Structure formats: structure tokens, C-alpha cells
Amino acid sequence: MGEPNVVIVIGPGVAADPGLLRQVAETEWRALGVPGRLVVVGGPTALWDVLTAAGQDETCAVVVLHGPDVAVRPVLSRPGPHAARTVWYDTGLPGPAEVATGSVRMAGRGIWGLAWAVRHAVHRLRHPARRVPYGPAADQWAELRLPDVRGGAPVPVAVLVHGGFWRSIWGADLMDALAIDLAARGYAAWNLEYRRPDQHGWQSTTADVADGFGALTALATGSAPPPAAGPAIEDGPPLDPERIAVVGHSAGGQLAFRLAADAGGVALAVSLAGVLDLAEADRRRLGTGAVAGALGGTREEVPWVYAAADPLTRLPLGVPQLVVQGTGDDLDMIDMSRRYAAAAQAAGDDVVHLERPGDHFDVIDPASPAWQATAAELARRLRP
Image (cartoon, rainbow, N blue to C red; front, side, top):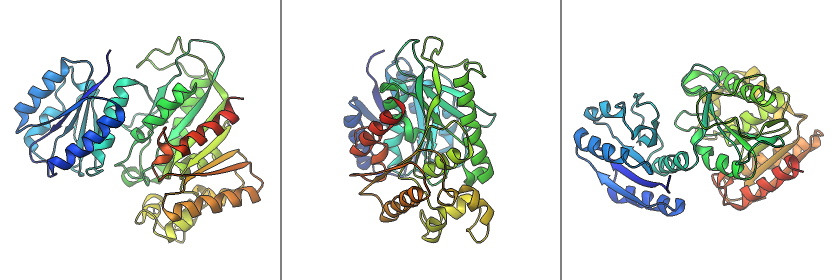
């Protein structure tokens, strides 16, 4: 298969300035090194014509801003050769919608979400992953990417836990680029999706992270059979259950550190701009009340939930930790990482604290100084 090209389709009724959409699209095309074009359609028939043409080109990744027009909805679930290469995106939150098998639907991230939709469409076409379910719910899965080696010694594993203030508009696609980068560096990447508490409750979230990690360790130890779907694993390297890092970004940093405290078998816990002091983050209304919204109340209302979930109150974790923070992030995030690292060291934990230039999302950009420093520390710990 050749290099991807991208077609972005603007559906009828999309309330967004076309020039701004083009600006976002062209920025991503340049960053990803792919050609692209933007097409505006007036109805479902024209949309289907574009999808049919795209389906004939196996290098074509499709992103559709489908908008609110109900006449377009049946096209989302219509199967065809295009489906496995299509990402459906809505800038708002229109509610659930069925899409064809193989397609992906994203919603609720505003205009900037188009950038993430383009990235995901290109990443999954360039670097396909094996999707492994660990439960029956739609969000109970992980994507496995393996290094390009055959057999040989077991490879270390990075479990990636995405952030997004525990809200359902954000998903595992946030960690696509890191998963690809880690596989290129010789790691197996396990990019974990989970049910978010805004739709399913806090207990579902914590249970899913634990279960998704358990599914990975079962695969690594050989106590579970290799999954049937996706790229072949039989010729890939075995996974090393003694060298597993959990890497969480933002809210995922909290989930990763809680997992490290609760589960055995974690060689290194990594926070990338993580929310590591839940009580203070809630008191400062971080993310417009995201902490209380996720945990079901304030620390005063549900103290037992905070006691189990808050990395700061769980110290010492008893697991080596890496706390990474961008110096251009929100000052409260910088403060939280510094105070957590100091408290963890005082509690006797093995902690490395790194601050590097960059904002909240640069820490998950493979090209950033923050990620380069993180990858070097991962290699020092897991690839001696």
C-alpha cells in the first residue's frame, strides 16, 4: 500500500467557517506529510458518491464532518470498501449514531477536533493496530501495536492510558502517535480504551482500566490466547511481563498511578502532565469541575472515593515513577507535578521528575523535547 492521501468531506448543515476548516486541515496535512483535499457536499447522494470513489482507492483516508442533517444519518452505517478507512466527526454532541463496521465516530471536540480526526484516520491507515476486546461494552478494548521484529527475546510493553478529564468526548486516539513511536522504538504498545464516568460512572472506569491491564498481562504471560482479529501476532516478538510500564496523560496519569498502586506487575508508572492531586484539583475547579464530575462529588461528599483514587494520598506507591511536565502547561498542572514528585520522594518512592518545554499536549507529541526525554528515561528503565 502506498502513502495515504486524505479527503475531508463537509456535509450539509455543518455550522463552521469553511476557511477555518481548511486551515485546520492543511496544517494537519503538512504535519503528517500527506496530500489532501476538502470537498463540500449538499446531501446524502453526493456524500455517498464521494465515499464510493474513496472506496476504490485503498490509500485514501476519509474524514466526514457529517453535521446535524438527519437525511445523512443512514449513510453513516452503510457498508462499503470505504468503511475501514473512514472517520465520522461531529463538532458538537448530537448523541449516539451507528456507523458501519470498521468506521470510527468521534464527536464533541469542536473545530480543533477535526485535527484529531485527520490524525487518527492517517495513523490507523499507516500503522494498523490489532483491536483486542477485554469486555462486551463498546469502549472495552485496547489496540496492540508490535515492534517490527520476528521472534527473539521478549520485548518491553507500554500500557497507554489516555486523558481528557475523564470525559467521553476524548478517547484512545489521543495516544495513537505515542503508540506508533513506541512500537518503532522496540516496545509493544497497548493503547487502552475504557468507559468514561460521565456516561458510565466512576466504578466502571476504574474497573475497566484494571481489566484492560489484566488482559494485557494475561496475553504477556501466555495465560490468554492471542486475539483472532487484526495484524498477525504469531510471528511477532513475545511480550515481557517483567517489563511493563503504565503511561498516562492528564486524567490518564491519575488512572495510571492508581493502577500502579493497585496492581502488581508494573515496572514503571509514568505521568505525562497527570492529575496527581485530586483533592486540590477539585478545590481549584480544574477542568471546570471535572474531578467532582468524574468521582461523583467533592472530597467532602465522597471521601472514600478520593482515598482510593488520589495518587497523592496513596503514597508511597511502591513502584518506580516518572513524572513529566511541560513548562508551558497550566500553572496548576506544573504545581501539581512538582508537589507530587516532592511528596513521593519524601515518602521513599523512586521518582524522577522531568520538566521540559511544551504545553499540555506536547508531552504526547513524539517530536517534542518532553517526549524525547520521556523515551530516554523509559529506555534507561526498561531497555538496559
